[in-house]
Image (cartoon, rainbow, N blue to C red; front, side, top):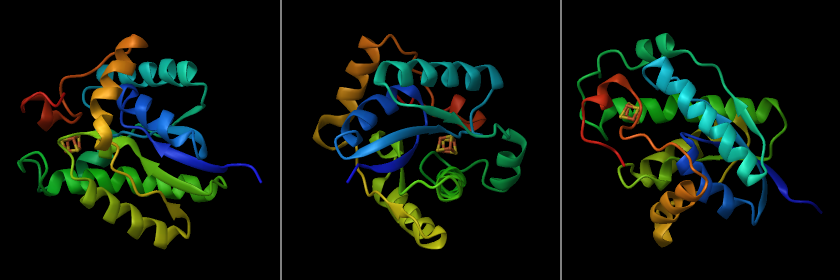
Length: 183
Ligand code: SF4
């Protein structure tokens, strides 16, 4: 029997590198670049171009989701001023994971997960809980992860340097531009 097909929500190319390498041991991986949170649009396209570059280097396909920043802003309304790691971020994770689950189910993937647990600034428990709930709702498997474990974040920085990938210095949204650099 062949490997299962996994749709990997990919927040950015550098985070994708190590996660894809790990997952390829057990799955056929497709990257899913769905990040309507990214501001401004020039930054979005820069990150997407780098995701394309990473996908070539890693030998896996990448699919671009819809870039709909207005809808994203509507969905986080009322939580704009939350600190990084608060409710705004939880909604942001949920928006991106929900679309990944929906797309994965619609297109016949066996499972889905996300690169976001590689970030030292993101709580893997929160992300895994959201992923598991969405998996139940869409009747698809969620792959539990904490990619930052076993030095995952450092490995991703090394791999992305080797591949010549652009690494941003803020998480993604307008509100994080003015916060402390993420990476
Ligand atoms: S800081 Fe990052 S995770 Fe939080 S809302 Fe902004 S883009 Fe989303």
